[in-house]
Length: 272
Image (tube, rainbow, N blue to C red):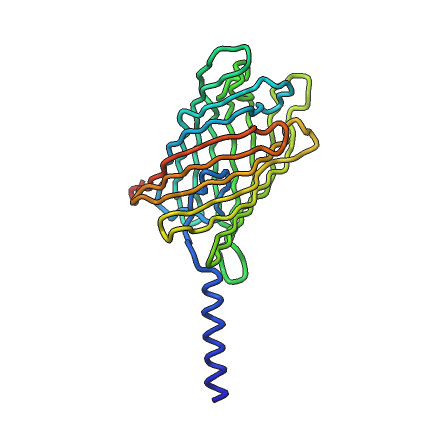
């Protein structure tokens, strides 16, 4: 009898451990938050998101004056490519419609951001999924028209993902190296980026709720940002629709924002 009970306890413990890491094992878009998943897309898999967004009262980086800046992304595009078992590439771009006090409506290019995500550790019983993300924002957006800074930025982030039976936890932390467009000042400002969020299934395999806290802090407070974000994801066959918004809690952040988008996936040629 004792041997039987010991066997039951052993198998019960194993089942509990499996449940503790149960959940999706593939990378997932965490829109409408700004978080990144510590898991990667499978090799030769791709995802494309087409979105729209509006941010009210958001300041451009290195901008001290309040211009009541209102920014529409019409559209925003995100392409994610599974290049290899341990490597994922990302391309992010947006076209902008800008409104500011005392100026007419302006249309122009936003920035192109290119990123690379490398798997460090696959999720296990002891450790979460861990990945390293390296990204650079190219200086496409015009500084004179206030679409951007017209300077390059570099981002280095560690991404952590842990799946539990009732929710998934995401933690992003790293360094943002911001190029300073103003002559006569320091050529760059280094900021600490952070993000913590959860995804909670509401309707199994159909609807998820997402909540996050995201921002960046550094000695140069003009570029400090912080926002609370929340939204939903609804799966519709090969498509995922997301809808959400944010409220800024640091003065230079957006007053509030709304964003929505549609994501689909497709397979890449085996020898592309």
